[in-house]
Image (cartoon, rainbow, N blue to C red; front, side, top):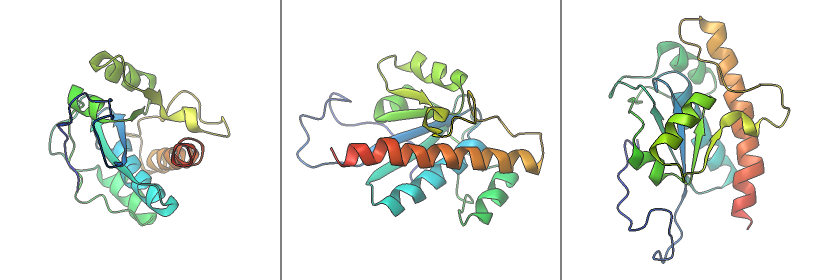
Length: 176
């Protein structure tokens, strides 16, 4: 499991010094890093692997308590889709993570604002930009405290957006 990142490459975002291609780096952000983003992290890893796209995916929370596990409802909903969140450990959003990422996907406009406050040059977007059907709205709602159905809805919304992200963004990047 990939936990935490401190970029060591000089000139983060400047890849002229690199001789080997590296994976595309995606950071997904929510509030506590226990409900939505553990799902998004695992699901995006699965989708990029299935698409044959070399990507690293990490998640963080704007108000995460380090080390907390994924919420039991997130684990259960993810397990139904064949995703294992049992090793997930929450981590807070940091400037190093934002600078490490090629793109940051926030679950809401508030998460985008937090990431941009850390680095206003970063490519930061609301995940729903990649909802090709345009049905989800301005962000993926936080399911905490709303019961199992809210987690199922969040999972579906995240899946729809990430499928669009892989098809419309990552595939375009990988084909030049």
